[in-house]
Length: 210
Image (cartoon, rainbow, N blue to C red):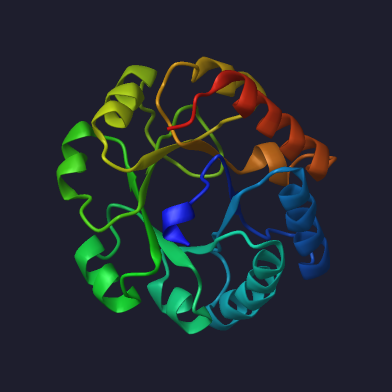
């Protein structure tokens, strides 16, 4: 699956205050609208709750044949036999994660500095940001110039993340990214299907995906 990775519209999803049913319906509508990969990010749930929710999201992703990744928690990814994991700079090193997960799993890595490209061996893609301020996660911003330099030098695909919406996608024109990752632009939308579809349309119109 990692060799056919479509990062074009990457959804980082958290259940928040939604019921499981409403959350799963939101994800399904997002997939129908064009989401190509889902990362489940749950900071508030305990391990059992995270695992149980993960089973439901995994079933949905398998049905629609898109990759299902777990944020940070390699133990949950292993327990679920998820398609992969996304790691931050403070999480386990890529080499250790790769030993635990095996060669066939997808591993994504967050970064925001050019020098961090020296430590990406074993990763399948990079998440780069934050591009704009966002209440979803406290993170310092990186300039579009740095994003562009990282994309030029990276041997693997780069996903831009952080406060991205339809208007921000236009600002990314000309940068050799592989996709954009969104949270609120889809999860907080009144019409999830339409939000995803419009984002995908803006991606197709403005970005020449690497």
